[in-house]
Length: 390
Ligand SMILES: C[C@H](O)[C@H](O)CC(=O)C(=O)O
Ligand SMILES: [Mg+2]
Image (cartoon, rainbow, N blue to C red; front, top):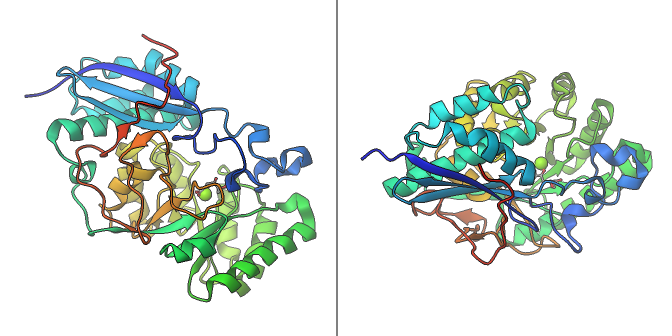
C-alpha cells in the first residue's frame, strides 16, 4: 500500500552530533588549524573563536501515515529547523513517501531565491536523508539496497585526525592530518608544516598514505610551494587547498602539483551544478558531504558526473549517511573516518552521542549493516529542542 507523509518535524541538538565541530574542552579538531580566517592572528588558535560551531545539529523527522518515522541528522541548527518547518515541509506533507525526486526538485527550485548552497542545502539534505531512512524502514530494507545494492562486501577507511601514526596501528589505510599553519604565518609556518609531515612520515613508514587537509586556507602560490616540498615526504593528496569559489585556482593548482600528487576538494560544494564546475578544474577526487551537498538524491547525480570525468568520489565524513552510498559505487573505492576522539588515538562513533547503533570500522574495515533505513536510532538521552512548528 502506498504510504503518504503525515508530518515533518525539525529539532536542534547542541554538543557533538552532526555538528562535529561543536564540542567543549581540548580537541585536536580545534587546535590551531589553518583556515580562511588565519589571516587574522586573533582567530588562528581556535576555529570556534570565529564561530565554526555556531550552527549546531539539525534533526529532521518524517512520519508516515502509519506512524513509521524516519530521521536524519546534519549541520544546520536553528536556521535549518526554521527552513524545514516553515518552508520545505509543504512539499512533503500529504505526498507519497516515494516522491523523493519530485520533492527534491521542489525544495531546490523553491529556495533558489535565497538558497543554492550552504545552510539551505544542508536543510534539503537533511530532509532527503530522512526520506530515504523512512522509505527503507517502510520497505524493511537498508538504504544501500534502495541504491542498487553493494558492489563490495565491506568498506575500507582512511582516518582523518592529528595522529596518522595511531590510525596506522588501528588498521586504517591512510591518515589525513589538519594543516596547522597558513600563508599568513610565512616561511616559519611553512617549515613547521613540513616538519610535522616529515616527522609523521618517519613514524608511519614509507607505504602508509599521508594527506593534508588545508580547509580552504591557502592561495595557489602557497599551495603549489607546499605541495612541491611535501612531495619529498610522499604526500598522497592536498585537500581543499583553496576557497570553494576559486575554481580557476583549483585548475591552476592541479596543473602545478608534482606528478602523482592528487588534488581533492568539494566538502563545502553543493549540487550537481557546483560539482560540475569543480570537476571541470580537473581535481582527482571530489568529497561531497551527503548531509550538505543535497542528500543522497543529489549525491547519486554528482557521482555519475564525477565518474564521467574520471574522478573518484570519497564523501566527506558523515558516518552512516556516507557508508550506505559508498558501498554501492565502484568509483568510491574507500571511505573517510573522522576521528572524533579528543587526541585522535581511539575509534569513537563520529556522531556520538546522538545516534544509537552507529557502526565504526574495526581494523579499518566495516560491513555496512543490513538494518532498515540507515540502521541507526536517535539516542533518547540526548536533549533535543523543536524551536519552530508549522
Ligand atoms: C580536519 C578538518 O579541518 C575538518 O575539521 C574535517 C574535514 O575537513 C575532513 O574530514 O575532511
Ligand atoms: Mg576536509
